[in-house]
Image (tube, rainbow, N blue to C red; front, side, top):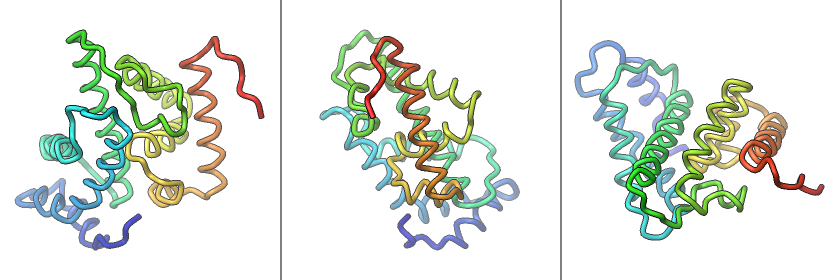
Length: 194
């Protein structure tokens, strides 16, 4: 993770969030904006060209969700896990609204690099969200690993840092979660070789 952020300041603000919030959301956004904008940019680069959400809009929507509700975060890693989930909700809500409007778009979601068959339709985002929710009920850790990789575009190293897991655990969880997701979303597909 880009260690340009003053982690101690972020953690202090996150812990103060629940008490006197005067100015805290603005300070937190100022300290984390560059990192969140980079993550949103990575996420949006994998979307279809001309997507109506831009990285800045995604961060702005994320900020509105952060500022709107009471939250309790333990540290910056917990905060970034929450941001990954919130970006997932924002992109899912956006895709669902597009489905409701009956517009057929060539939408690619951040999974396209890892799972190339996913991303050709708006319904893929809604299906992915339902599948991740199901996986979360079965194995929350694997769902978090997949969520960070797919929605925030975190590298393995960043995922390891945010979740506080070993490289072997992240590799294993990611491989198992991808295989589970493939079976869940493409039950008629032949098993992958290898």
